[in-house]
Image (cartoon, rainbow, N blue to C red; front, side, top):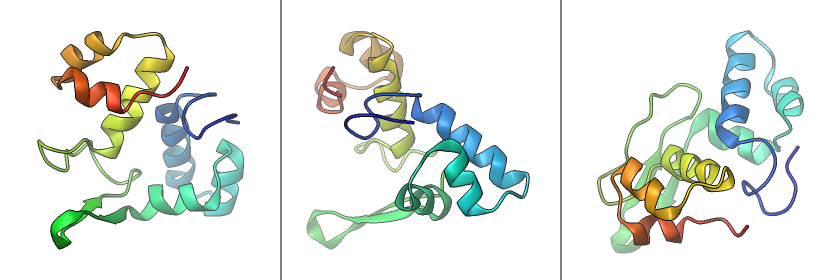
Length: 118
């Protein structure tokens, strides 16, 4: 379904996540839902169970599962995975970095670091 760099082309990931969550809620198996929306096993596992990312200072950031969670900010300092996906989707639709920063309440530099190459 997607081409090029992961998350930078094809169907917006928010739509893919939504479709994946609906299939799981309908009782479709993980493998079938994964194949239906065109994601790999690794992505499916991360979306279904969340993930932990080690950061400096011995801390770990926890990103909750996508299909069972409401959009939750990890902290004011870090972007959540949902925010990253939303920023990527907005950039692919042609929104400017400045417009996204104003809409999301983030600095220009934060949004520009998340920018996918066009």
